[in-house]
Length: 478
Image 1 (cartoon, rainbow, N blue to C red):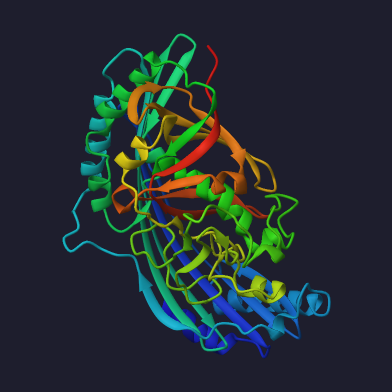
Image 2 (cartoon, one colour; image 1 turned 120 degrees about the vertical axis):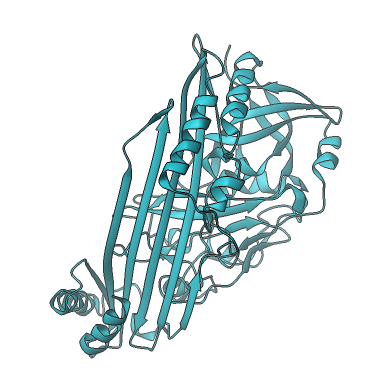
């Protein structure tokens, strides 16, 4: 199919300033077990192509699942018509933007001896974990699943681009709920954040084995625990909560199309403005945040973005200072500022937008024990359960599944319903401890929403444990 599309594109490409074709074939399967009962399988195969045309300054695109000559020619004609209609009326002169001529290949990593698991093997593991979670009558729900995707994508352009990428994702998930009267507590596997590129070794090695009984025990422990105390105190966030903190209060505010105002009607705007880059103190000098689509195992790694721009690691925040936005080639041209290879689409029938890929807090030098020992009064929080943030990505309030008190440099008892609130930049400026590589975890989420029509995309976040000074913490109600 891909060789055929190459020859078709060569024959059908119109006489315009620029034309590209992005072909995507996506295969997905989900296997779910709930309360020890196998649920109906979910399997899908989705294939189609997006054509983009730039001509005389205008920009147009059209998508089709009809990959015949007639289907592609129709999409090309529609895209050209939109480019002609937008010429002279667009937000920028698209013909003045240098578009991709990249050539190359990218593939997700594979282990040297990947496990050979049949569907029956996978079902047996999920059934066992779900059943082993039933350790008490107060365990009212358990859910175990494996979601896998295999995506092949070809990007061609009249500038000479020919990029082929194969991405395989493995996403195991487990969640258990415990109830006693009007109190319900839950624990999940990595906050549903075990989302990585690779093969089924991820399923076997990233916590699924034995998690049912372990997480059920922690949920019961939470039922018996006191509520988290309230007040200003130190806050130690583990990677499964740092993932959400990075995503909402760094990732979304730095998306360049938000800063330019494109997303204000739906996903929101940003407190960040163009004049902040290069000088704004976003966090303490300990904060170093990288856009890194080159980390092989991470969920949103790739060789080129969906506009064909080569992907490379870039610091968006260095020593606390804001460096560059998450903006692809087109937004960079509009804003007159350097960005990253961040033009990404969720499917063949959606245009690329400025999106996070892998947005990571770089490891520091503090051990977990050293950070705990430095706290006189505080709370350790693990695994996100709730979030709320305003439409400029500034004021936020987040809740976690699990908490532990820290008193006089020692971990104490478990507390339930731990929450905290803050303002993005003020919060990051309170960063006073960054964990070393031993505390770092690579996590991700397949559910980042944005745009009209809606696009739900996959994002990776790697982070060490991090310690924040005097944060407003609060618990649930008795």
